[in-house]
Structures are given as C-alpha cells and as structure tokens.
Image (cartoon, rainbow, N blue to C red; front, side):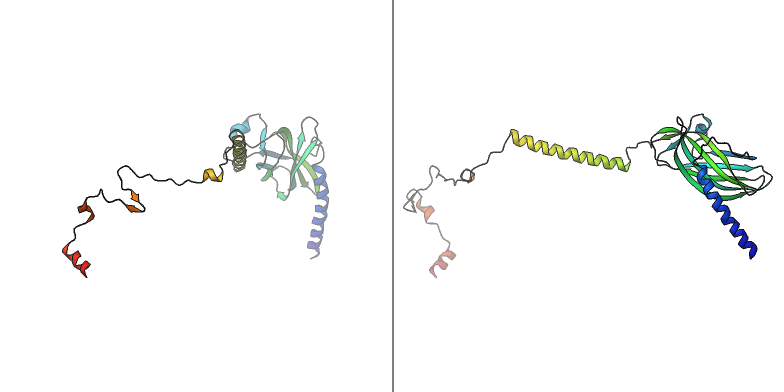
Length: 252
C-alpha cells in the first residue's frame, strides 16, 4: 500500500515537472542543441504519394484538411525510454521566428531497448499560403531525466484548397448572385419602360361600351305602331294547315 502511494506521488511530481518543460519546449528556438540519444526518428506523411515524397519539393499542407504525420522511433539505448510529449510549431523562414504553435500530444509511451513505435500526429492549419518551416519536437524520459529531441525540421508549403464548381458554398453564392442580377434587371426594365412608354389611362366614358343599334336588313318586315306589316306575306304561310288531331284539341 505504501509503495503504491509513493509511486503515485512520484508520477504526480514527474507530470508537474514535465508540463512546464514541455510548455517551454515549443517556444524555444528549434535550432537549440539538445542531448543526443541513441535513437532513430523517421517522419513520413502517409497521404502523400511516393513520387511526391521522393522529390525535393516541400511537403504541402492544405488549409482546412488534416495532414497526417507518422513518427517512427527506434530505441537503441541500453535502457527503456519513455516518450512523454510530441508537438510542433511553424516558423518563419526569413525572420526565424515562431508564428504558430501546433497541437501538443501527451503520449507517455514506454519504448524498450531495440523496439520500434509509430506515433501518429495530425496537423490542421488555416493560414495564408506561404512556405514555412515545420518543427516537430519530442520530450523523452531516459533514466529519470527529461530530454528534448527534434523529430522533424524542414520546409513545408501552406496552400489553399482547390476550388470546385460543385462546392455547396459556391453554388449558394451563385444562386445569390443570379437572384440579385435578376432582381436588378427586372427593376431597371420596369423603370425605363415606364419612362419611355408611359401607359395611357382611359376615361370611364371612353372605356364604357356603347350599345350598338341593329339596323333592319333590306327586305325584312317593318313594324307600324308596334305591329308587323303582313300584307306582303302569302296567305298560305300565315294560315298554317292543321292536322285533324290538332283541330280536335282546338275544338275542346
């Protein structure tokens, strides 16, 4: 019980010491010398094609897209080492000044002698396109001593995302622009049309429909005091012949 308590207290004390050291680590000059350890560190970028990785061109980090990094460490020390922290920073190439601190990962990984470990790391930035220097640093523990080691220190290129015509944000922007242009064109068309060709307002009297008087055609019957002149109609047309059945109904 007492040993476990002492071990827990020692770990708390060690973490209290490591935190301020790691905080200072990523603010110091990356060219500062540190203790040499018998380890090898290989940093690769899994998302990059082998052809791009073999060229001398700087690694490209695209804004808004996570950049995956793999840090492979092999321990050739005679004792087990501990990997406490892994973090990075971006430096200006001209002024050699730190302009951006990246994510710091708390690892606490034990690496025995002759063993290898792969540590994943992710870089996510949103900056102006520019060439910068990426510096990755580690805090290691060897024989109860904390030392720093540089994992990566090389030029990277910050780039913008490639534009796509099917991007939802661009489609929404196109829709807003088209709506604005259509609204402005409709207003201008109505304004200039009313100015050049004003509409004439008709008076109520002119707009009212006048009744048309039908004229009697030539040769039609004319009326005298409301009665038709039947003198010109043949008599057999006026007195229609009736059937016997119709006569019987008339007699009743």
